Length: 172
Image (cartoon, rainbow, N blue to C red):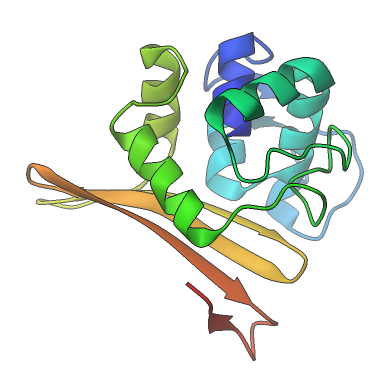
């Protein structure tokens, strides 16, 4: 959702838009460098999305989250925190429907914006399929959402995992 809104509002120009690392060491070494929107998507670079959310601004963010009817639409947890263990809540079923709407380009964004986000979500391509996905986490819950296109069919999914890596269990 943040990538769609960032592109639509012009907070980022395209998937090559660079945000420069602030020098703060973070838990994942891959996060400790400059990133583009594309590399931030592939590596779930939280600081990039936080900076982009601040660039979008609270009012535009709230408007777009509402237009999408994304989860409970609550961004009161702060412009750069609401989706991270905070106020925004969304169910796995809502995530899967959101992914289906993105695949079908039925969201309230320009077509080129949706096509860009879909392109940077590509995780794997085989001879007969393309896997699109995005990871995320918060409050001890991990997400993997996306869709897989095979032939002329597509299937959206949302996997929600809770617990530590040694006790993780799927809840969707």
